[in-house]
Every structure is written in C-alpha cells, then in structure tokens.
Image 1 (spheres, rainbow, N blue to C red):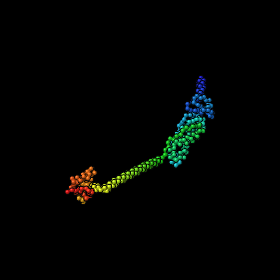
Image 2: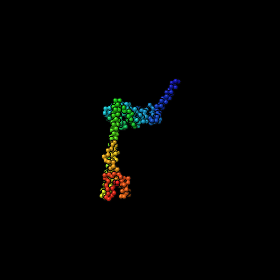
Image 3: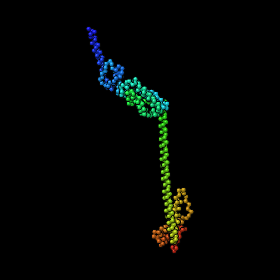
Image 4: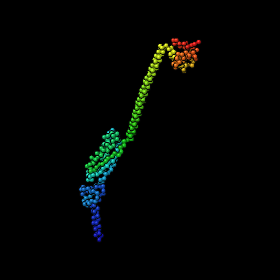
Length: 338
C-alpha cells in the first residue's frame, strides 16, 4: 500500500521538476544563452521561453543595459618621469550576448585590465602638464583604443572617463611654487607696463606743457615787439610833430616835451622802494617854471591864443621865474613883467 502511494508521488514530483526545468522566464534588460549538451544553441530574449528538459540548460546571463565599471587606481609614470595616480570609470553595453559569453572568459576582468593597460600607455606618452591639462584628449584616445579592442567581445564601450589624476605631494608643492612664481612674474610685468605707460603720459604732458609755454612766450614776445613798435612809432610821430613845431618857430612845444620827460623821471625817482632820502641836484624853481611852461602850452592849445598867453603870464604865473628852456617867440611879450 505504501509502495503504491510512493510511486505516484515520485512521478508527480518528476513532472513538476521537469516543468520548472523546461519553462524559463527572462526578465527585461537581460539575455540568457542556451546550451544543449554543453554547446551554445541560441539566446533567450526577455519573456517566457521553453527549453528541452535535461538536454538544454541556461549557460550565461548578461544584462544588456549600459553598465558602469570602476577602474582601480594605479600609479603611472609620465613621459617626463613624473609619477601620478590615476583611476576612472568605463561605461559599456553588451550587444552580442553569445560573444560576450564565449569570446572572453571573464568580461568584467577583461575590461578592467584592458582599461588599466591603455591608461598607462596613453599617460606614459605625455608630459605631466599635458596630462593635467588635456584630460578630454586622454579620454578620447582611451575610448577609441578600448572600444576597438572590445568589438570582438560583442561589447560596445560608450564612454570612458578619468576620474582622478593625482600627482605626489612633493610635486604638488613644486607646482604651487611654480604657479606662485608665474603669477608674481605676471604681476611684475603688469606693474612695469603701468610704470612705462605712466612715464610716457608724464613725458607727453611735459612736452605739451613745454610747447604751450613756448607758444605763450612766442606770443608774448610778439606782443611785446608789437607794443615796442607802436611805442617807437608814437615816439617817432611825437618827434616829428615836435620837429615841425620847432621848424614853425613854436618853442613852447619843446618846453612841454622836455618838462614832461622831466616830471616822469622825477616821479620814478621818488617812487623807488629803496630810496628813503631823495637829493635834488636842481632848483625847485626850475620845476615850477617847467610846470608854468606846460600850463602856457595848455592855454594856447585850448583857445587862449597869443593874447591870452600874455594875460596868463601877467596873472597867476606872470611873476614866477621861468625855466632855463623857456623860449621866446619872435615879436612876443616877455613872460616876466615888472
């Protein structure tokens, strides 16, 4: 009785195991390879799939989504013998599941070693300054090389990025000193350039001031020369008029001219700031007589005539002594009357 019950249970259990072995559900974003008796036959896409139980089995399972792979850090020697530590990330996608499963033993390990090898190769062919300043160029070169190398594996490398490039501490200190020296040099150059521009501007200002000053002196000299010329013309005209008056027999004009110069010279002598005492080497009556001669000329000029001059001489100034230059016109009455 018990043996009769055990056999059906075994049969049912066998059927259930067979069903689970033959029916497979592949999740979205993955692809599985199918091996029949150890040989690859086909690739299962996402969804429900039927296998031949006990003859076919699942070989490898791969994600067909874009995958990120970390590249471990490593020390790399540059072309100028500087040691830097570099690491990065690789973005790849499986395009052919069969090739990714059977063309390379371990796809992840192969990608990591391939990326590390090419990083050493690319960075080793460049100077330190180029490595630090041309990271985009390094990424492009690495992407071209690694993508070409992984094409037989059924893998597409979409992007590779160097995450960190770290020089040693002593090299960083030297670079900091170099940067400081470079900035100091540029500051000195800018300061020298500013001083040069300031000197040029000052020189141009001094030149313009000198030109303006010279032009001012020239204009002043021209005006002084013009004034002296006009003064000389006036003196010449006065001398001409005086000569004409003397030629006409009018000696009072000479008396007026000499008296005017006499008074001007005496006024300048009296106004001198260094003179506290003025010695007059002439008689006071000479000046008064000169003034009397000026008054006589003025009377004649403003309508006094010959008769008026006689009355004036006999009036207020008639009894005053006349100067040594007071001349007499022919036929006139003497200036001093008894």
